[in-house]
Structures are given as structure tokens and as C-alpha cells.
Amino acid sequence: MRRQLCTSSLLLALFVGVGCVAAPTDEASPTVASEPTGVAPPPFVPPAQGADEPRDPLRTWVVLLGTGTPGSEPDRFGPSTAIVAGGNAYVIDAGPGVVRRAAAGAIVSGLTALQPANLRVAFFTHLHSDHTLGYPDLILSPWVLGRSEPLRAYGPPGLEAMTTALLEAYREDIRARVEGPEQLRRDFLDVQTHEVEPGLIYDDDVLRVEAFAVPHGTWDHAYGFKLMTADRTVVISGDTGPFDGLADIAEGADVLIHEAYGAEGLRDRDAAIQQYHAAMHTSAVKVGEIAAQAGVAMVILTHQLHLGGETEEALVDQVRLSFDGEVVYGHDLDIF
Image (tube, rainbow, N blue to C red; front, side, top):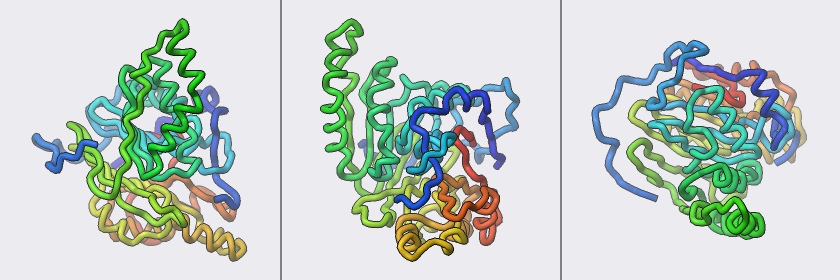
């Protein structure tokens, strides 16, 4: 599997500056049980892509919309990943700037499913602020820009209360847009929230999604997702402490997207910080061990924590201590 990187420095310059996030210092449905029908295509191998060659919208693409953390690096937006398949976009987490990042992703990838008006389905791994600050953006901006159906949102308990509170917070904006000259349809702003438990949480003609519980400090509900299409299986860890059970869940997956911190850098921090990150996150060394045990084809690092100033190459090398498959340090607007 070859990495398809389409980040444009010019486009980054145009889109950076709203809701940026980065490497931190010390911070912190339908449920049809059948398999997708039809004859499965051969294993997905992204073709070599020329600058003017359009991507096949019917294949499955991974687009990193944001790879940041609660930090403030200006070139890393809030955590968000899009799976684009069958002409649809499925957004996982909504960090700051998610809609603008999706718009940028549509331009650099040529995948129109990422255009803001087409953002209709979202999944939330957990409700930490850095993963949800873009949620009101995802609710409101595509509606203003022409989304013609309600947003469907899937996530842990607490998502419905958050959704209700956000709509109430923007009550006057909504009233003005519905009753004023824009005459927007209020029913298209309705959000269909689904508070989910581990197991099969979503199944349509293109995508099946299974949620699994992960340990993330004191959070009662934090999930990772296994997303399956006809041609690819992608596993997203979400924010998680070390979780050996992920190896079984991700067994044979085409792509494992996993958060990571630099193991060596953490050893140089004080005891409280070591304890915090060891419970909340996973070292790049451990990611490599999980990936090797699972036999995945590719690892993409995201939500990277450089606790000791490690280089990108250092984090990749730590994964490679155990894993001999392809390892990529993810950047915003990378496409695979």
C-alpha cells in the first residue's frame, strides 16, 4: 500500500489560522447484522496519482482533516479523520476548524463528498473538548452552506445533552437564519443523535462501523472504531491508554490510525506527568507492538504528543522497533 500525500503548502497557507491545534506540553443507528453484500473488489492498492488525475470516489480513502492535540501549533488542526467511500464522507471526531479542513480536503483530494454541504454523518470517539470544539461548526456551517438533511451523529453517552446545549446556545443565530432573509429550513438543522455502546453502531450500503471501548483515564465512555467497506478495513484507536485488546480487534486491518507519544521523551518528565500520559495515551513503542501483533498493513500516527521534543522520525522509528510494515507520521490533509 502506498502513501498518497496531497498536502499543498499553498492551500495550507490559505486554510491555516482557524481553530488550530498541536503537540501539547502537559495537558491533558441502523444496526443490520449482515455483512456488506455483493462481490468484493480486489484488495485496495491506491494507484500512483498524477496531479490532474481524479480519485475514484467509489473507492475508500482516508483523509486526515486534523492531527492536532489541545496544543496550539498553527499547522495542526483539531483531531478529525474522514473516511470517504461510495461518494459519502464519514467524519470521525470534530476538532476545531473541522469544516474548513474538510473544505480544504475536498480541494486537495478532488473528493466532493468532503464539501461542507455534504457532511452528513459523524462519529465521536469521546467528548473531550479538543475532539468536539468543532461540533457546533459541523452542525451549523454545512446547514448555512446548503446541507439538505439533518446531521446524524453517533457517540458515547453525553452526546445528546451536548447537542441540545449547543443548539440552545445558538438559538438566536438559528432564529435569525430561519426567520430572516436567508429563510433556511429549520428541519435541516435537526441533529439525529445516537448514543451508542460497544458493538455494531452503523451499517449502510457502503460502511459498517463497530465501536469498542478503550481506556482513557477517568473517562467512563471512550471508544475506538473499526470501519469496514467493501475494499478496506480501517481501525481508529481514538484517545487511549495502552490497550492490548486492540490487536485482536485490528487483526488483518488495512490501516491502523493510532494516537502516540514519544516514549523516551516521557521518561524525562516529572512523575505526575508520566502517570497522566501513561493512563491517557499510548507510546509509539506500544503502538508498534500492537500493530505487529495485529498484522495490519499500515500504521498512521495521529494526535502526536512530542513530550520531549522528539522529531517526527523518532516517533516513526519507535513504532518500527516492533513493526516492519508501513509507518506514516500523519499530517493534516494527508490522503491515503
